[in-house]
Image 1: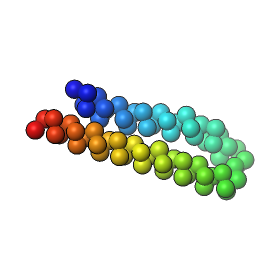
Image 2: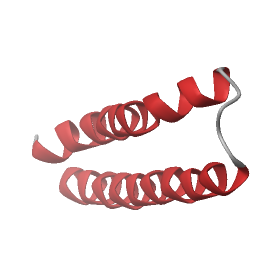
Image 3: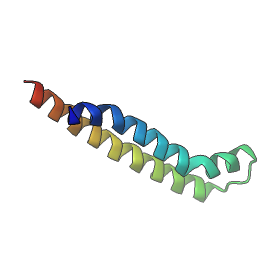
Length: 69
């Protein structure tokens, strides 16, 4: 049951983390007040969050399948 909740909750958590970490930068992009170096730095930050989320999701799916079988 725990792994099922983890499989459901990890993508929701990752999306919430991306939303709250990029809210200010999103507004800066809309108003054209963001410089290129900050945009590249934020891209690495977003890719890091997504990478950690993918690893956590794969581990949770693996453990869920292992528990079912």
